[in-house]
Length: 82
Image: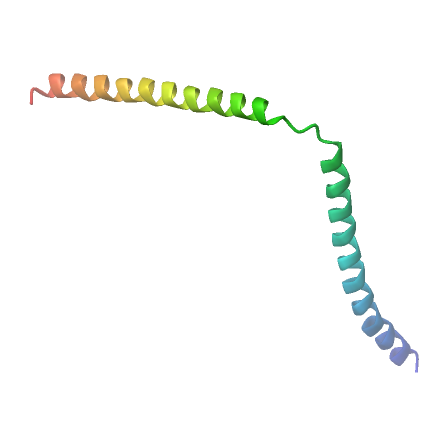
């Protein structure tokens, strides 16, 4: 008889775990929204400035890497004699 009660407890525990899982997911989203409300978002002008700085930096870095690649390949061609 006690085996049946134990078996029923295991059956009842599964829906409770599923419910608990969704409650935890809901709580996580609620916490994310609360944290996002605390964020100080940049103004449009600041965002534009930050974007320009990032783009200029990326272009500068691409030019440096390109020049290093060109110099390296030229050096290898010179050493190989082709």
